[in-house]
Image 1 (cartoon, one colour):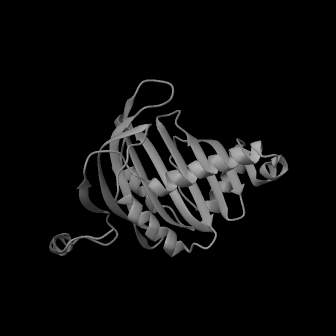
Image 2 (cartoon, rainbow, N blue to C red):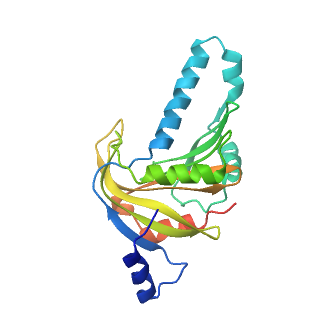
Image 3 (spheres, rainbow, N blue to C red):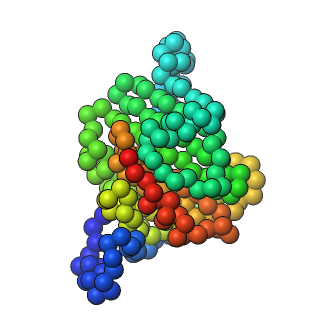
Length: 224
């Protein structure tokens, strides 16, 4: 994401260390658009439906591997990236998907204690890591409402991840779960190089439990 000259001058004047997250300009209120990711996930669901309804049951059964076993989820997580997980999350689901032109690995951790976390790794045939990163950066600058998360404000912060400066979106808003009352939350999302493709993180924390320093520490722990 481009920064204007004034922002670079401010950084030099303040003498910020490169390891310290740099605050970016606040984004206008509205919904967060991770459009490319949402479209891909929608496409995954559509492909899955077509496979099941089209008589390719054997292929679908071998293309998708889902588990709720904590040990298997832990193995999948380490195949995506290494990370110091928050102490208040519990493994909920893991999934491997292989459709040939697209491969995806995803692990989810439950929100029982007011915190939820999702990690995902994706490979697209014909797309290099640099191309996927460029596409994500273009999409991240646009905005779109998410039916479950109503964003009120957001800002981009740069965090040092595995030796690289990575941009993450720190958003504040209201989460509308399928069951239960809406609640104020903070949601952190971003994309980074993973062990075998590009990695994504979505980290949701109840407003009353939000600790920005702890969140940044978790992000900084990510490495291949």
